[in-house]
Picture (cartoon, rainbow, N blue to C red):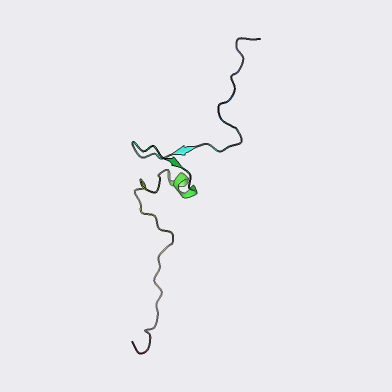
Length: 65
């Protein structure tokens, strides 16, 4: 055998790369697509996250109230 033989890969090439939170000292792995896009976990994210975009709808008052 050749002494310069290539070593085996330690990760499965079919899996996606693991992403970690970029906040200083945070050991959390990011699993949520939104977290991976932003680079921060839900706890460390400097911008608040909401599940929806808030918008107010003009409505007529309810009669009798």
